[in-house]
Length: 157
Length: 416
Ligand SMILES: Cc1cc2nc3c(=O)[nH]c(=O)nc-3n(C[C@H](O)[C@H](O)[C@H](O)COP(=O)(O)O)c2cc1C
Ligand code: SF4
Ligand code: FES
Image (cartoon, rainbow over all chains, first blue to last red; front, side, top):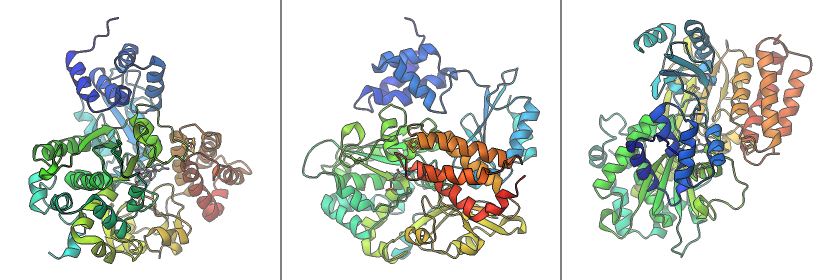
């Protein structure tokens, strides 16, 4: 079976494996490394992880579907995750989210037609002091209002 | 600088490069580790932490020394330390604050805990969203290894420790200690039935200590200055300081370090600048989202575990969320119930079904489509979850709803 896993990922996985006394314990970091490469986890990624760690593919699928940061479909180039928990809601998060929906023409869970943006609402991101806040891929942005958000969107190609 | 000041975790947080080993060491960092490893027995370290009666800062408030004492002694068997850096309780951001300003303080705390318990491998389980902080921790680990503060023969002694940073992947329940262990073993974050407790059967079936980031950050100060100095701060039975995360409708949201037992009203009005935009205070969630809310006339309370339980709430993670008088309680209810419905791991029927049902009702109330009996149903559902689940998350989902219904029933009943 050919899985198309680049060598640099294989090397990273070797390093990850050295940190745990049991191979299967490396599953989360291994999946994260695979997802970083392609932006999502393909069927073949899951199989490769299962083979490499010596666990049944069904176990891998169980884990992939349990954790919210794993994706089985590509997201947009800029994946917007808007916190809508209490502290952010007290600072206008719902308004920001509906502004984004209108402006991008997509709902939560969708990707814009040009592949530039995808949108989701998430639970507390641990940056409530910067409410309302969101993440774009791995970056945090806080204290947003519509204007600041519009400016941010323009900067994201 | 007197000793009292040195017991403040955040004393040096204004410094530019505190996260670098060099700066940390120049401020007295790793001196506690050197002192312990060279001049104290593991038992002496354990006894000092027991004497300080350091209560856990992660939510449950269990004394760290007693927990460490549960790990079987006098064997060479493998055992582990898991640092709980999952920080998912809504309103909480103190561990992020601590790790980003001073990652070496956490590492020094981990060295001391591991030395006391005879641990040689530690994992920091950090929530997946804290990517930049995980990187900062990794850098700190490399620095510490390069200078002999981690690895074999720490400070030239026979004691060695490896620390690995392990990133989660987005699941609030993995902050619960046994779910964290499952997750670290590469599985879904499903809480385990207790007993056995992790101190006897934990990670990879080995005895395991699990502590919150802030708990471990207090250890170096306790070892350097002694339990007595720690206990002089705060309350006689619940000593030291705590870092309160204050957010919501306040003028100056942020982390504030105060002695345990400080006044909630002062924390809100004097530290956090009071309610934003000249509005009035309507309610406060005093200990993270799962803590039952207090109303304006209930906030003259001390911020320590016992006082808050007496006031009908809990200190939890020390996260204070302030709600202003222009915020409809249906909004708060909707957010609380949606959170638990989303994060339930699904193992127990009352939690899985109850949280989803509560969220549907709350969404209806918020949209102004209340049906007769909705508020009573909410109350019945929350009561049905409470005390009937495998892990404490069931209670965490039920208690805030019960408090909200008890204290704001009229407003909820008017919501259509
Ligand atoms: C649903 C749930 C979520 C939790 N989340 C966290 C968390 O994010 N961080 C944390 O330190 N403790 C969390 N806890 C508490 C842990 O189970 C455990 O008590 C704590 O990590 C022990 O450390 P401590 O004694 O130093 O406080 C959570 C508990 C429950 C029930
Ligand atoms: S109470 Fe909820 S979160 Fe805890 S084990 Fe049961 S279903 Fe899972
Ligand atoms: S509530 Fe939005 S980051 Fe915490």
